[in-house]
Amino acid sequence: MAALDPKRYDINILENGGTVREFIDKKIDELSLADCSEPFHVADLDDVYKKHLTWSENLPRVTPFYAVKCNTTPAVIRTLSALGTGFDCASKAEIELVLSLGATPDRIIYAHTTKPEAHIKYARARGVHMMTFDNQDELTKIARCHPSAKLVLRITVDDSSSLRRLNLKFGARPAAAGGLLRRAGELGLDVVGVSFHVGCMCSDSRAYRRAIADARHVFNTAMGFQMSLLDIGGGFPGSDNFPLKFEEIAECINVALDEFFPPDCGVQIIAEPGRYFMETAFTLAVNVFAKTVTMEDAAEHNGKDAVLTMETNENTSLSCLISWQLLKRCRSRERRYRSVIWGPTCDSMDRLTDSCLLPELQVGEWLLMDATGAYTLSVSSNFNGFERATVFSVVTPETWRALILLLEQTLNTMNFYCPVLLILFCFCFLLLFNRFNCI
Image (cartoon, rainbow, N blue to C red; front, side, top):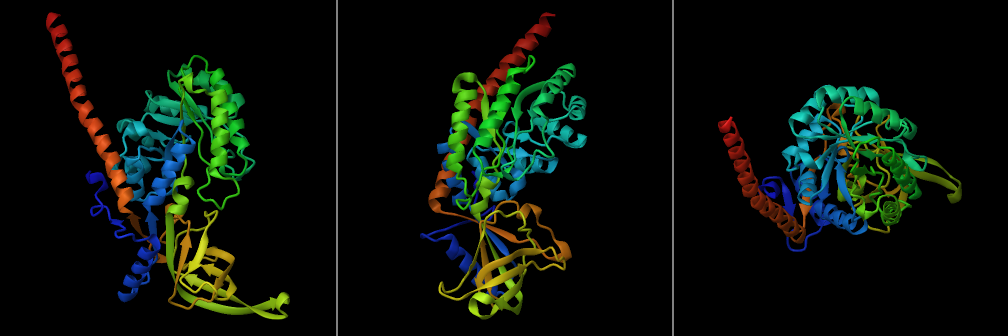
């Protein structure tokens, strides 16, 4: 159970009914007493656990392989690993990270279609066999560096209804799939499945149905390969603020899977959610260290209206955020002003938001930003020497006990199978020994 030791990995237990907001307020008070105003994130592991339960309830046939690129906080990786989640890794470093935090090689898909040869060799050395491809040159590299890999062909699908379209860069056209499969066969490689991605924050659930139908077509022209895996990618919203709800997407996916890949077809279904698990799990606390007040015409008020321009001390890129909220520790009836919030660097592109309504903040006050867990920490930098925000992970005792129970079940299973495997190994060794003695 050391993998989830709260003291060893700086996981804070919210005792006596404590809440995340109370933890944040206490942390701000502690920092103020220490004359420190450094920004910090709070990761709510209960939120991650609830997302896992919601996923299992709504997509029971689909195993999530968490997209590590979204957020690499160790406590999060360990929690998902304890929950039995797989991991979508895109580099040697991500593979190394998840293996060091409790994942096993069979629960990793190297889901980058263009990989450095050194990274492919590393995956092979660590027992990671499942990886994607979408072009012939990649097949040549894999044949040279990892000929026993289990390959997944990524195809392009319609992502026109998504906020960020990924098929501009990744995926082979379905019409080109036959040629790639033939080439894989010529190289002696094993193609075990098909993957796709409908794009980031998809606003039309029917995109998944169309993509699943496209994948079925590729399965039907498998050219002798025994395909047993379908990877439906990501694009799932992580917040209820998004117009298309996760439950609506799940319903559409379930219907499409039952039609094109029924339960008795023998195909394993996986997905690569990132934002879904992380977005609402994190809250960011920043300190306002500078402020400018300007006046602009406000016709609706027959006069001037104040515009607040504030600088905060957080250098995390929030440009990747889709939905988030700004909260000040203030009275709810305070007057709001149009506010522009900047990061601390000298870069004029370092702007968190150019228009939001906030009460007037004073220098030294703290600002809280909800739903900041997705693609913020992973793209942050120390530009201009500003430090990345610290992460404090919290969990309630109830969720902690549930995670420990899951881990104990895993360990008990391993304790049962390890002796069995050892006996089988010894049996095989004796058979070989006797065979060679007979020769």
